[in-house]
Image 1 (cartoon, rainbow, N blue to C red):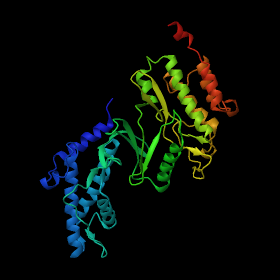
Image 2: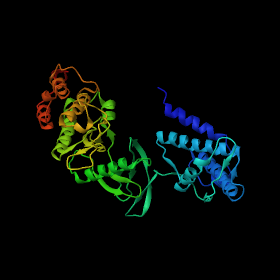
Image 3: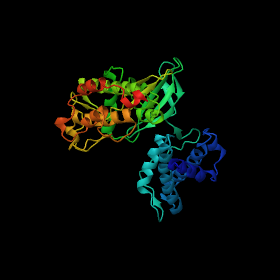
Image 4: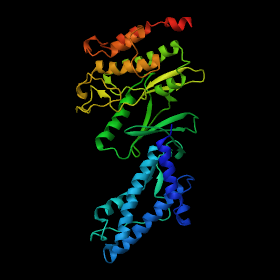
Length: 389
């Protein structure tokens, strides 16, 4: 099946291939794939900023055609960097140039030229260093005071996730970095996620290590894959014993959260991570605590907007989310673990019965605590069909 992101990237490459750029700007960008695009955009911005500075000191009138061209350039930068970000290439425009565009945009007119405001402050034109950078390609190591390369491994609504290998220990870690466009509340929620994870200590919950206020990111242990991807690739060969171990680790992790007065509220196949070892053994790690409900915190979101990937149809308001609603999402994850399908299986065997009890419309008939569910899953035996196959 064709990948729309690849089509967009191909169109983006073609868009800039035929546009010339001078050596003065080419030398600033060594990225073999997107360096030329960055050089073209940088050169065009400098031409406009230099001209605007000159007009601000003389007639205070920026001509019609250049005004339209700068408006088009602003759109191109926004759209093209967004396209790259969708493909995992996180290129950012320097804050000084972002600020300059924000100051120019209100007075630019698409026709008749544009009047430069009398109080317009000259733009500092940057000619000898890049203004478009791979902001997410490096991470600072406090011990060595140096940077190492990052590789994007995932992206969600609020953050990007990258991996790197620590040169001192030869161990792979992950970095979770908040997106730059988060509002204050979502950024506060991102920081709260770190604070909650930092106070937790359990084998089946992902570990976090340090928060960087300057970049709004934190280190965490690296996991090899998601539950969704692991089972999708190995569904035909995973034994019942392995599925049961994964299921119990997952349930033990959720049960631990509930004992800590936390409700995850975003249990999904993507938010259950796995560490995969050379022997084939796997270790479950619960992650993505951005929607967590902390009974001890006053910050917990109280509006009624429904969130989360697997939503309980019996939940009328997100602020009323309780353990029985978490049980609903747990049932769907168990269905995928044991059956390899995202839909609920028929209740024709013991596994199906357990899963369906998690999703009953009558909340009083569902499991009321994860401990009850653990007791049921622990008693499961190899299905007769597999045992005799």
